[in-house]
Length: 104
Image 1 (tube, one colour):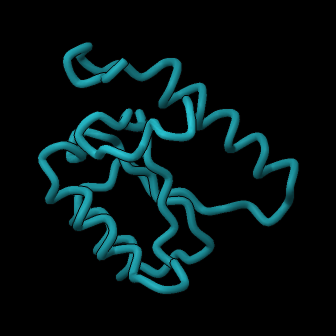
Image 2 (cartoon, rainbow, N blue to C red):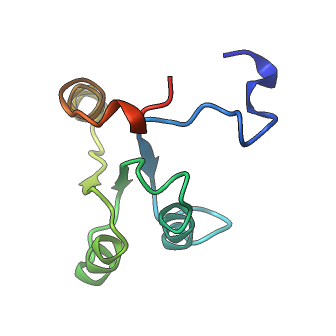
């Protein structure tokens, strides 16, 4: 990627996975999730919630908005590193999507 690759939204590369923490400082993460899932160009990108909260109501609301999975951030750095490695292997290595949905 070069510095100017993201200037034009129509030509910008799309991620293969979005990690989202619903506890964002200036905007509600659920609102961000809704915007992603309401956008025809982003809807097919898997969204994984990665957060420190685990209230039943929040988890239910997140899944109602078509999130792929909800993960708790481990406090321990080694466990967090292992989670990120496992997550990467699963979503970016083992999981498959139709080639037409993957922008190269």
